[in-house]
Image 1 (tube, rainbow, N blue to C red):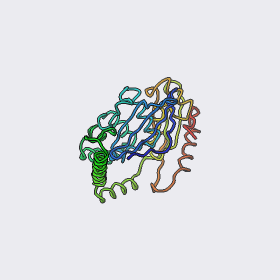
Image 2 (spheres, helix red, strand yellow; image 1 turned 180 degrees about the vertical axis):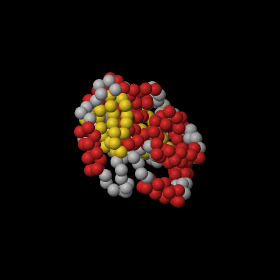
Image 3 (cartoon, one colour; image 1 turned 90 degrees about the horizontal axis):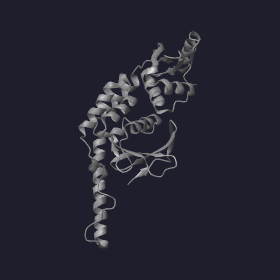
Image 4 (cartoon, rainbow, N blue to C red; image 1 turned 45 degrees about the horizontal axis):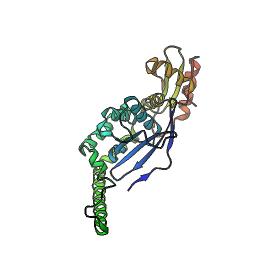
Length: 280
């Protein structure tokens, strides 16, 4: 049993246009990446469902991170998919994108939980080949073979369901409450080019998460600010200074502080003549 998620999505990295789509199978979720105009995928990545609990493949930033890793390392291909558990460098990149520095406890719990489920081999995920046929031939043998494969598939799904539901309900509630009640640093983030002195200011309800997001978009070549993208391609990450220009003092993390952040950014823009908005 397999299920595609809607139509392929488009992603532009540098001068190359990619299309990426997701495929759900009983044992894992597969990311397929195509170059525009090509029918064969250039890259395939397999993730188990417990790993998908923290790594959101529907985010363009995650897809850009994975494609950038593939282009840089030239690992994987259409014939031999990459299993995330076998690529610790890629896993760390995705976790840096998914967890902020204040969320290291949740990150450690996630890694501990995935390790407790044990390593997953390529054979475990792929199972029996789709073209395999029962020995002996004939309608009866084929019918028995189909029944056996269906029984194994149902058993595998039950085992996977038990694994994914193994987390204690109290632990789930504790994680949810901790997420709701956390107090991330809010304020105005600044990216200043060391060579030109130009500064780009953006509002952030979580400054660490905002820096991770901006880095991922710039590294993937998909940031909407064309001037910033041009400077990044010319000088690289080492040519920029990342800092928090101003911190917002707030009481209730559940309230919407968008207007206060916009006002704080306007103050910072008025104080620095070389500063412009990071984006709208």
